[in-house]
Image 1: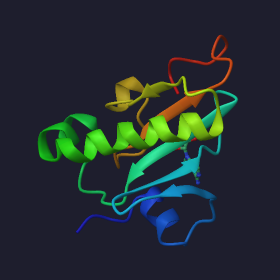
Image 2 (image 1 turned 180 degrees about the horizontal axis):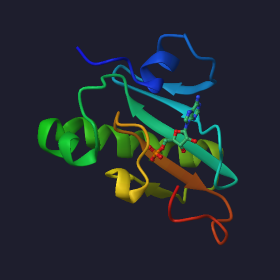
Image 3 (image 1 turned 120 degrees about the vertical axis):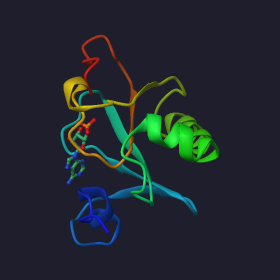
Image 4 (image 1 turned 90 degrees about the vertical axis):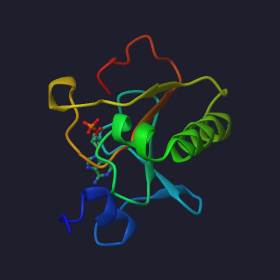
Length: 115
Ligand code: AMP
């Protein structure tokens, strides 16, 4: 059993964060260091998958659920348009190895591609 990730600790209430949405298998929080006017993270409750490649292989339906929740949040928090980013691997900027999607909305002209 691996150590709980920072996101698991947020889900368990050990680290404070505002959970903005929750479904049976997912939750969403505000990124602590926003890179866009709206910057949310959509996260599976399970930490079984390190990154989006593992998730796509292991549970593609859960990946589709993540896209669906991202869409819903973009409608609720912005105009419905959004940028969805999965940093995959340390060399691409991934720092938390519990798969998560960055949902960026608002004026994205200045938003970094590296969420
Ligand atoms: P990545 O670098 O793609 O692995 O994304 C990890 C993201 O988690 C970063 O954008 C961080 O700002 C964000 N993050 C780290 N700790 C927290 C926290 N306690 N609450 C909300 N977001 C966090």
